[in-house]
Length: 235
Image (tube, rainbow, N blue to C red):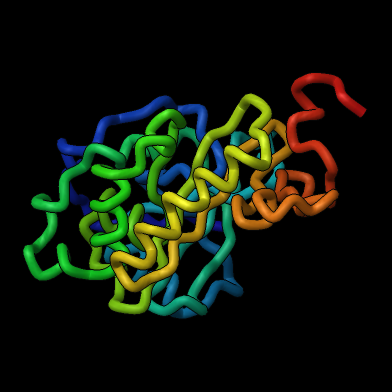
């Protein structure tokens, strides 16, 4: 692999510079990117357009100081997994860092896109959601962080909600209800992932009360009956 430097652009002062120990769904502004001979042609253009990558759920190569990241292109199908050197990380933006980034930092024409309408509704009306640490991911999070126009009229609003403590199914339903109301108000889908000690699980799946849910971790997806067992030693 070789490194390719992106065009220099100013770090958005409205987005705080976060910790440098990255976690899944964090956006990394990178000085360079590791290139591979078999990468798709669109990767170079996407990198030059916005020198950011999202942290993937995979084990880091600590010995080589490499972090697993993914690049996104213009279309939904354009996703590419690669690695970034920790020394190339200039800025680390967690989803929760984007909660207070106002839409006025984007062109006015973007404010009425359904994903951003849903985000605005959640910021003002979702009282129970606000008891958690949360933030936008996916195309909405990427656009707020980078100002690259990635949200479309059909984009969902993706959220990450950090839930380090056990969440009852009743409270999960309450949380899901707030998100569904915002989705109905905006005419789009709001898709939330709960970040638990066992990995990421879908809020809708957990709220359904299934005996086991799919948890996505650095070791891969696996079914689990208690997403908090890793933290509390519950079998």
